[in-house]
Image 1: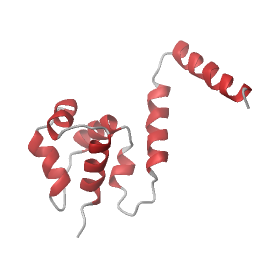
Image 2: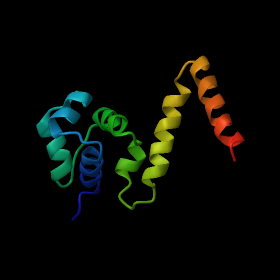
Image 3: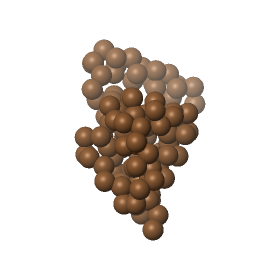
Image 4: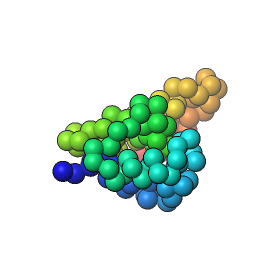
Length: 107
């Protein structure tokens, strides 16, 4: 039986060129915890740790837990970006909107 969660974490971690040690450090986890998520079947992540892992990998928890691949990676990245965007100060969000408006003007 495949460990879809583990495969996704491993693939995204490698894509971002993060070692097990580095992802563990960034998420307040141990290297062995990250290794177990990637390799044990079934993995048993805590919601708090999974949230931190998803944030560091730039995706949503829903994407990581989707074992039927119904949530596309691109959609998860966009959703995570939007969550971060919503938490930015109003000034910063306005700057981002102006930048995107400039892109639209070029078409």
